[in-house]
Length: 204
Image (cartoon, rainbow, N blue to C red; front, side):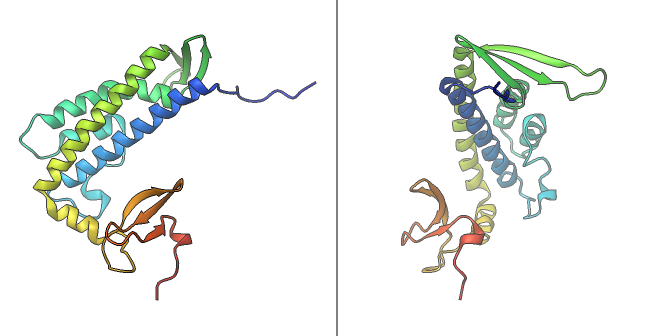
């Protein structure tokens, strides 16, 4: 008798939806984390100067709202992030089952009180719409980050001064994908270095 596995073999169409959701949600949170830092004129290289910048959900939304700028955008994007946060937590941290064109998600309640499990059902179409919303917010967040960078170029300069430098010309290197690997690449001379510090050649 074959030994039972502890999980189900996920079909490709379900794996794609879960992967896209995790990818775009994380990408949005990373961009908004940068916005919290760049948008704070008192930010330093220490995380304590920008609380919640590396969190997600409601804590990140609160940090976005606290960006000191006379504009409605922080509140608008924070509200959109909050509206997705409960669904995102259920989908990312829950257990998925599937049938036909929908998934059943089971997530343990991590709050106080009696132990319980919360359930949610989503069609593939609904999941695609959630993914599309994350992509749309990410586009807006990226434009907002670019605007904040023009307001506080000192933060951008500080980040670049702390970046990996090209051994040829000393310029800050940027992250890039080369032959399926993430590397640091110099935009001037094209020199690449491994993004893994343990694999970088020793400096002389």
